[in-house]
Every structure is written in C-alpha cells, then in structure tokens.
Length: 319
Image (cartoon, rainbow, N blue to C red; front, top):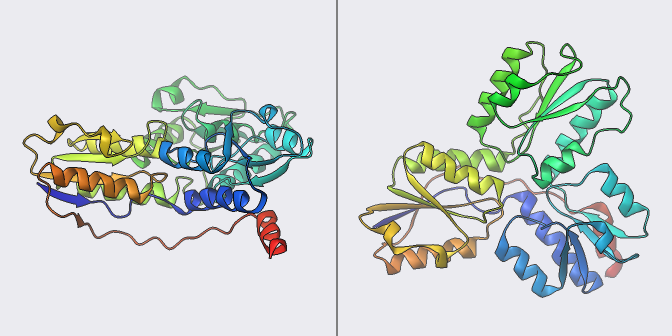
C-alpha cells in the first residue's frame, strides 16, 4: 500500500501563533492562564495546553477578576472585548490576523451604512465573533445577515439591496463558497465583495492539495478534530472527488476494514492538527502494509504572524 502525503498540510501561521501565545503566557505568568474557547480546534493541542496549566472556558464570566485571559484564534465579538477591558483582565488576543481582516471589513461596511451578508456556518465561534462586530445602532438601521448555501440566498430579503456587501468565514470550502457568491451576485447584481478573498491562504492551499491527492489514492485520511471546520471541508472535498475519506483525531481512530483492498492511501491534516499526529498515522499505516510515505510537491508557505504587541512588551520586560 502506497502512502502519499499532502503538501501543504497541518499547522498554519495563525494556529502556530495562537499556540505560541498560550505557551508564552504560561511561561511568563505561570498557571492558570484562562483561554476563552478552544484556542484552536484540535483535541490533542487543547489537552496538551490544559496539562501545562491553560484553563479553557466558554465565557469570560468564568474567569476571575484580574486574571490573564487569551482570546482564541477564531476571534471574539466587540461585546466580549469590552467585557474583558472592564474587569481588569490582562487580555492577549490570539485572533488570527486573517479573521481580524474580516472583522475590519464588517465594521467598515457597518459604519458606511451598508447591509452585509456573511457566508458561514451558524454557531461556529468565528462566525459568532464576526457577527459581533456589528454596531448596536448602525447609522441607517442597516443589518448583517448570515447565509450558508444558495438556498439561504434565495430566501433572503435585505433592507438595502442597492447598498450591499458580502464577507466570508475564513475556513470554508472554496468551491462551495463560490456557489454562494454566484447566487448572491445573481440576486443582488450590485453586491460588493472583498478586494482579496476572505478564505485564508492556508485553507485554500490545503484544499488544492487534497483535490490533487484525491485523484491518486483510493482512500484519504484527514487528521483533524470533528469540530475543526477546515478539516471537515478537506474530508468533504475528497468525497466529492469520489475518494473515500475519513476524519481521524489520530492513529487510534483508524479502522482496519478501511484499509482492506486499498493500494494507495493519502494523508493530510487540517490547519490545527500537529505533524506529530500525522507521523503517528503513517506508523499505523505501515503496520497494515503501508510502504514509506512519499510527500507530494506543493505550494510553499512562508507566512509568519507577529505575536500581539502587549505580549511582545511583556516578553521584553521579563528579560
């Protein structure tokens, strides 16, 4: 059984940065460090940080006054930010800069009196944070709307169809999102969109790599947790290409019957899954007759994001 590795796969710059923020804060201030929501959507990463002293909470009300708290990579609403500032909490913001870019687009459209349509998955922390950038009293009574698919678009009524823009969640399927954008443009011919695609470079690159890999294998394993949006999109993409695909947290999730009659298996990882889990999956596949893994050629990723200014100052002052 051949083992082919997608390239790129695994951690993106935003996830690297978010994890480093938690680790640095623990090193500087000691445990506990509170983190609002899972800092990234990966069970192994969250468990490891919890063992090191990170305490994951759903709401800021669970954080004691004057404690240190980190906002997750998915971003938070203005209300959460205001609450953090009002309680003497020391806040470090691990929001991915590409999510922050979408937040700024939403705030700008709102201030300009435009209606905004957000393409995204209801209930996802990133979507809740983006919806939460809307002003409480927008200048024209303009509104923000959430759609997930072309059917939502056909049922949508907006206040200002002639003054309308769309933004998207950063971790969506590029192809699915394009179908929603086309539906929006058909229904609202004057709609504006972002100058540069809101779907992040890492999501796009990992999806392109899976599309290529799915043509060469009988089975694709996606290393990622069930609550990871971008990992789920990778599995769906492979299935749309006609290749059986499963989402696994790690090697222990692989079922022997999946591998029966398989001559080539592909392996990729979502943007929040560590490479150590991928290597564990490869070792497990070798035990079932896999031969040494071959890495595909892929798009190199050189983007790095700086740590938040407040954390850089704290690190500098500690030396």
